[in-house]
Every structure is written in structure tokens, then in C-alpha cells.
Amino acid sequence: MSVLVYVEATDGKFKKPSFEAITYGAKVAAMLNVEIHALCIGEVSDDELKSLGNYGANKIWFVKDERLKNFDPLVYAKVITQVESQTNSDVLVLIQNFNGKAIAPILSARLKAGLISGAVDLPLMSGDSFTVKKNVFSGKAIANYEMHSAKKIIALTSNSIAPVATENKATVQEIKIELTDADFKLKVKEVVKASCKISLADAEIVVSAGRGMKGPENWGMIEEMANILGAATACSRPVADINWRPHGEHVGQTGLTVRPNLYIAIGISGAIQHLAGVNGSKVMVVINKDAEAPFFKAADYGIVGDVFEVVPKLNEAFKKFKSGN
Amino acid sequence: MKILVCISKTPDTTTKISFVDGNTKFNYEKVQLIINPYDEWYALVRALELKEKGLAAQVSVINVGLADSDAIIRKALAIGGDDAVRVNAEPTDAFFVADQIAQYAINEKYDAVFLGKETIDYNGSQVGGMVAGIMDVPFISLASKFELNGNVATAERDISGGKETIEVTAPFVISCSKGMAEARIPNMRGIMAARTKPIKVIEPNATEKLTSVKNYELPIEKAGCKMIAADNVEELVRLLHEEAKVI
Ligand SMILES: Cc1cc2nc3c(=O)[nH]c(=O)nc-3n(C[C@H](O)[C@H](O)[C@H](O)COP(=O)(O)OP(=O)(O)OC[C@H]3O[C@@H](n4cnc5c(N)ncnc54)[C@H](O)[C@@H]3O)c2cc1C
Ligand SMILES: Nc1ncnc2c1ncn2[C@@H]1O[C@H](COP(=O)(O)O)[C@@H](O)[C@H]1O
Image 1 (tube, rainbow over the protein chains, first blue to last red):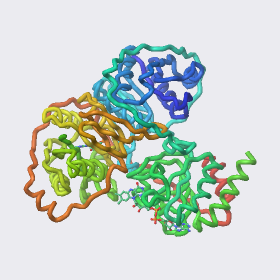
Image 2 (cartoon, rainbow over the protein chains, first blue to last red; image 1 turned 45 degrees about the vertical axis):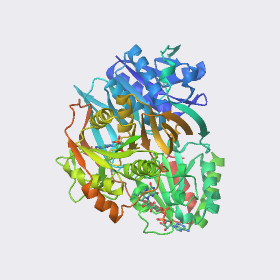
Image 3 (cartoon, protein in one colour; image 1 turned 90 degrees about the vertical axis):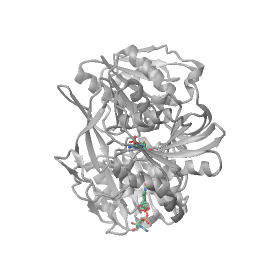
Image 4 (tube, chains in turn purple, brown; image 1 turned 90 degrees about the horizontal axis):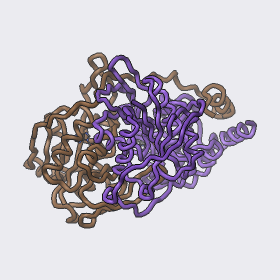
């Protein structure tokens, strides 16, 4: 038995969600008293791979195959099931990001393994019972899922667990996978890398603005705040719909779900559909000129005021704080 | 091309969430059920647009659910679906639903299965990938654009770190997110026509239960919002650093 964690590197580097997933896997492995393996597909340096050991991975496997450069969830699932069988893994951990959402359910169907997508906490185990928590009803409730299958897959929501560094005793090794050209049915024509420096889905701080900004020309101060804080920018749906901001920034029920440590909402009313995508944030700050705006009910800190007065002042204060640090 | 569109029913987005039977069941009382927005706005409408352009011959709708799904199925037919099938079972978990859909798609020789990217109640994002896994056909996940040229599909999809355009030959499964199409409201003619369109009811295949919900919890209520004066933004910075420890 073992735990297998599938991680991805971006431009050859692992980011925080990977370390979170390894930490999560290590804790599950400790509960089960088994080893934890990590798997990475693609071109990553030995040192970078070894860094996964800092978070508890015992064995780190990598798969190299030119044809895997492009992401095809069916093929990736095939690779992972082969590694799963070679490492005799019973629990698989993935990250609930765009790629994880595509791969995990295929693995589940292939392995007849129960899948919890978007887990927010470690599993609870007692006797035969294995339960995992996840958010449901767009964050308005939490469900405890019981997993009945022998093999189990957990796709972890980012920012659910803090990476914990441990002593590194990991070994790094290539693993051979059998793939035929017929496995590759999906052709990639064009890739457009996300333009923002910090990916919204994984950002620890998100600065978000709504219709209260009056027009796209006023977003300079929002971008400035994001720059100072090292944050990603987001927006409400109407703002994306009228093309003030790119669609990729739209958060909420019909957009992206984010779960940062800090969400700053500027000139957003806090409609339930907006909250659905952001109410998993640890701390929420709301700036709105209307003291009755529903967002204040969900917020931790609030300022009633005009964004055009408050935001520039706040940016100065953040700047001062950052330079003093 | 024959397209199968999967629709699920879900509580209206403004529903107040509560549970019954010792927090083991969702409280459906006074809850309005709608077609899951991704299924209706994006998967169904895009499939219909393809049919209107003469690129698809048939657009069928499938739902796994009991008779209380008939209202949403009728609505999907009113929007323009040709026919519908309901697998007569309470959906227990995503794999159960996926298995029913995949078997039906295989038996009835559908070329493409369209789904929403996720349901807004259980937020699974699971059924689509599972259907692809069971059918062993390519999975176009989280697509925001979709074009068809004969049997060859071109789609834009989200991947970790960006967007990409891919090409794939039918059969395939596609999960639809925002951008695919614009929502439509059924018109009177559609509503009238839907009354006579067939809804076939079939019994489910036996499928193993992989997961189940043990119970639900409501999130811990926030302590309340701490208000800070607009001319004292330094105080907010201090609180975020010292109290909330997020900067
Ligand atoms: C099925 C469905 C799905 C939806 N999905 C989403 C979704 O995913 N995401 C989403 O965001 N919305 C979604 N919506 C829309 C949602 O209901 C709201 O309409 C939307 O979130 C409102 O956006 P807003 O807060 O930017 O704009 P508004 O509601 O117009 O609010 C603007 C706010 O700015 C404040 N303001 C104005 N001027 C200033 C100023 N100078 N200084 C300070 N404050 C100011 C106002 O007091 C107000 O509170 C959905 C709706 C439906 C029906
Ligand atoms: N009971 C159901 N009947 C038919 N289709 C469903 C059902 N449940 C989910 N789906 C489809 O699968 C998609 C993803 O659902 P989920 O994996 O539950 O988030 C939905 O958007 C629907 O298109």
C-alpha cells in the first residue's frame, strides 16, 4: 500500500499547490502508516524534483515522453494508472485545478475509485470508515463524504492545508510508461499562457473590483494594489460581461471559484452568486460606499467609503507597510 | 452527428441552504429547481446552435433523476431539444450518474456528449470526465469555445496556467463553461412543441456505489464585520497584518 500524489510543475518549477498536495499526501500516508510517492510528468530538473522531498515525499517518480508535452487528460490518466499499479497505491491525491478537474474523474472511472473533488481537509479514518470534507452548494455548506471503494482519489482545493517542511530523504527516479501513438487523440493547436503574473486560481491574495469602479479606465488603482500585495486581480460578472475586464477574471457561481487567504472586494455589492465563488476565502475585506451592501454581512473587515478616495489612500498605506517590512 | 446533452436539476442560485433528518438530507421544501446553469446556458444552447447550422442532426437530452425532473426536461425541450430520456433513479453519486449516461450514449451511438462543467449544488466537476473514462473517448474539459467541421471539433479550453485550442475527432465528451453560447429563453412556440416531444423513461443499470454523503454542516458564522473609518486606512493595514495575519 502507498499514497501517490500527482503534481505539476509550471515552467519547470513547483508552486505552492504542489507542496500543499505533498504535505496532504504525507499526512494521509502517516495515518495509514505507508509510504508516499510523488509523480510528475514532463521536463523538470532533478533538484526541483528532489524539493518535493522537503514536504515529505519518500519516492519521486518522473515520466519523460516528448508526446506528453501537450495535456491530454485521457493519456495523463493512463500514465497515472500505470504508476499507481507499479507503486501499489490505494490513495491518490491530485490538485483541484483545471488539469486536476479533467484527470481525476477519468482516473476514478478507470480504477473504480471513489473521488472527492475539492477536498478541504484531511480525511477522517476510523475502523472501515473513511470520510472527506468538501464544500457544496457553492460554499454555502460542507458535506462529509464517505468513501466506499478500496481505492480512493482526493482532489485537493488550494489553500486548504499549509505546506509543512520535513527532513528530505527522497529518491528521484524515472519510471517507464507504455504509450502508443494511438493513445494520442487530442491535437493541441495553440496555447495561450495566462497573461497575469499570478494565477488567479492559486493566488493567496486577490484584489477584486466590480461595477462600482464606473469604467475600465479606473482599474489602474486596482492593478496597483495587486502589484503592491503580490496579488491576482479578479472582477464581478457584469464587469466581465461588458468587457471592462477579461473573462478569465470573473469570479462567482458562473465564473471561477477562488479561496485565497485574503480577498479584497472593491465596489462589489456582494450578490449571492458572487459570494458563491469567493466565500471560501479566509479573510474578506469590503470597500463599498453603501453601508447596506450585502457584502458587509460576509466580510471580516469593512470600509464604508468612495473607492476613488479610499483605494488610493489604502495603496499608499500598503506601500508604506511593504517598504517597512 | 448525434449529440447527447446531460442536464441535471439543481436548487435555484438564491436558495437558502438547510438540511433535514439530522443534517443528512438537503431540505427541498419550498426550493425551486432549475436546470443547472452550465447545462442549460452553455451545453444545451451550443448543441442547438450546431443543429441550426446543419452541423448536428439530432440533439437529445438526458437526465438521471426521478419524475420530479420532468419539469426541467420539458424546459430543455422547449428551448429546442429534439427528444429526451430520463434514467429513472435518484442520482446517488457521480459515478452512478456517469455510468448511466455512458452506457446510454454507447448503446444509442451518440457521437458527442455535452455536459456542464459542474453542478452548482454538489460542485463535483466529475460526471464529464467519468463518462469519457467509461466510454474511453477524448475528454474536452472546461471548454469555452467550440466549433465543428464534419466530425472534427475545435475547442478552446482552460488548462492549468492558460488556455489552449485543441482539435479532436468524434466521438468525444465535452464539459462546457462560460463563453460557449448565450443563454436563451424558451418562446411560446417552443413551449407548445415541447408538450408533444417524447420523454423516454428507462430503468438504471446496476452500478457500484463509490461514495455517499454521510452528513452536512453549515459553515461557521463569521464573527461579524469589523468596520474601519474611511480616513483610517492604516488601521486596516495593521489589522490585516497583526490580527488576521494575511499580509
Ligand atoms: C444565475 C446567475 C449567476 C450569476 N453569476 C455571477 C457570478 O458568477 N459572479 C458575479 O459576480 N455575479 C454573478 N451574477 C450576477 C450577480 O447577481 C450580480 O448582479 C453581480 O455580482 C453584481 O456585480 P457588481 O457587484 O459588480 O455590481 P452592482 O450590483 O452594480 O454593485 C456595485 C456596487 O458598487 C458600489 N459602488 C458604486 N459606486 C461606488 C463608489 N464610488 N465607491 C464605492 N462603492 C461604490 C455600490 O454601492 C454597489 O454595491 C449572477 C447572476 C445570476 C442570476
Ligand atoms: N443527474 C444527472 N443527470 C444528467 N446529467 C447530469 C446529472 N448530474 C450531473 N450531470 C451532468 O454532469 C455535469 C457535471 O456534474 P458534476 O460532476 O456533478 O459537477 C453537469 O453539469 C451535467 O451536465
